[in-house]
Image 1: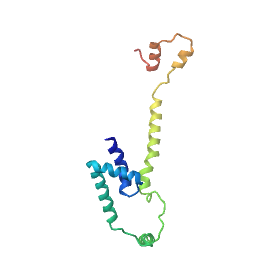
Image 2: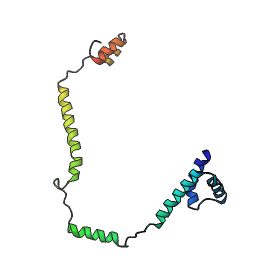
Image 3: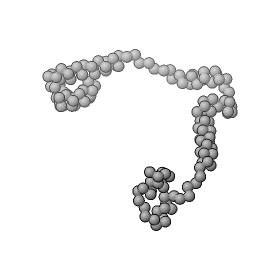
Image 4: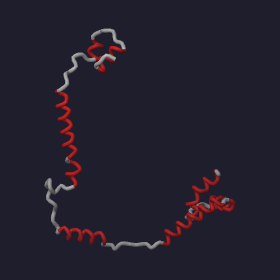
Length: 146
């Protein structure tokens, strides 16, 4: 089992003919006795053959230039003017972010006016020199008797 995992890591190099002589000899010896690794090698060889037999397509040398010229011809060579109505996707994605941040800030500001400021904080209590215990700290932190 340990040998199989080591062999399976080397099978791709072996299938490509990139193994050294000693390594290839060890792999062939293992493949003679191990049907699982032989099947793995057969699959790799089949994949390699399928890929190498495939039809290779090449693009003409001026393909990108032709596509660029076609695109320019379709747009009429005009530049897009920048305005909010022409912003398109930009306005839909980025404008709501600052608007939302401003609206939330305003709501927090309005909500904070309704609260009365605490006149006695935990820091003031500790600095006053009074004896501090857990119950007193919880009352100051939670604002209620617990």
